[in-house]
Image (cartoon, rainbow, N blue to C red):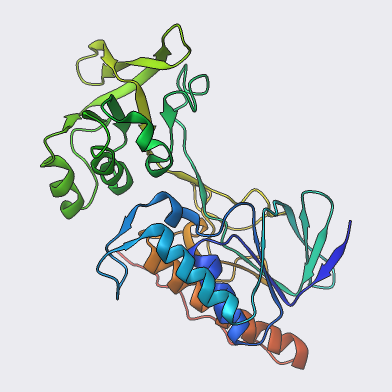
Length: 328
């Protein structure tokens, strides 16, 4: 066990974490970015990025590599395969970040950019056939389903984008959604729903997932929520894209959040715990995009520098902008 001292610790090396690390490094802050796996976050689960300004089209993995190289250039200390267990504020106002294995990181400020974990369907057979037909990552597992009939569950941008991606491998993709219309953006809907390999199945939920004698998924039992009609849908793969749960469980103590658990911050990205900042997908957002993640991260890192300067000098930190209050 060892103790590591930094001025700022950033938890997570997705777009928000890497961008925050780059700005903190530029500000000459001693910065550690702790990542439980490989840097890149959700970029690694997206084959093609077409809505990041300046790049008409770029592979998600390539953009992740560019982010990492840029951030490291400015002195950020990137530590991979480090799993954070708890972030605790100490009586003196500093933070300890405890990681798996017993090491502790100490810092005067922490930025949480830990993203989210895919929401599961919570139906019978889902866990049993995870990795044997059930998946939450099209890029990771799509190639295993060349020539197969599969299903995608969800109705947002992620579900439709991944369904479209999976048609390069699968012969047919059922797109199962519980509502009578998709909630993805119009351009994403147009691309997916004009793909002849995609078959929409609306007003429908998955009740259970079943397999064959080899222990691999063979079909799902689905049900129309309006008519109650139940039937078997033959599919050897089920890709689930029904949302994310923010990875905020490492924060020790109460913090303000919305009903879904996403962190509430002020306009400087500070949480209700002074010195603890949040950026990217863990934070309450209208939309979750690479652009919003790096925007949050830029603000958070600059606000951290001003916060730490104020702590050193004894001067008050710049107040956040007042939040908008709607009337009527």
